[in-house]
Image (cartoon, rainbow, N blue to C red; front, side):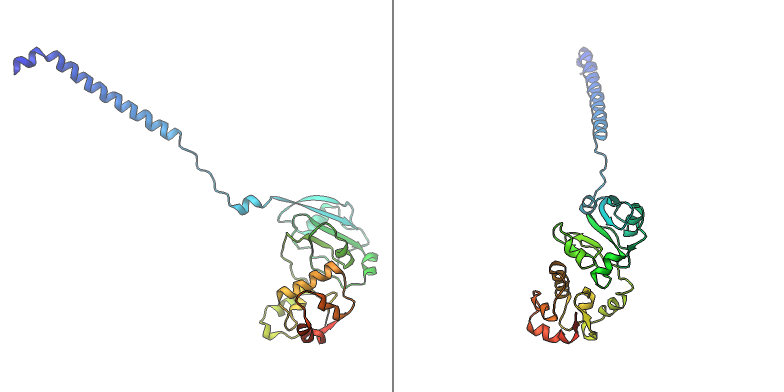
Length: 244
């Protein structure tokens, strides 16, 4: 056995060297593969929600009428109407702003119209703090009814209660059984005002205001029955609380 090993010692040494060499090669290959894997690892990507992608950082708002610089302005999404007025150089001396909630946030493609005092007096309407929603671009009906803030119907935004409507808003927060109807003018009443009437919920109240915005003021209280959802039964319940 010893003599066999001595005769073949050369081959044993060569075989041992090959084993060591293959081991080193395998180790180097493993190190290279590990390094490539680490270097090719993708950097973490910040997740962006659909809401963040859809919501623009700025909005375009048009303002015109009794201001110094009519035009289209790019506003931040958290800006309010007062910021737009300041951007446009401020109100003219004869501007009428009693019907505008200056703290109302702007919306995409909002139109703000500032009447002169003479213009608003000729309309013979009660100051209306509500927003006039339209489906297209014709704002004529909104202006005829004394609205200064006009927004596309696709841009639903929150209306802040004004001093003239804060009492009504408080009433509507109670249950329907606590409603105490009062006489309201159907040509100037807000959605909240209509909600105080018996049998009138949010859908019917909104439908009345939308009809008035599109068709103009009601000629008689009976014309209220032209509004979808206001039938004879509902009208009989509320007619004693209506005026024009």
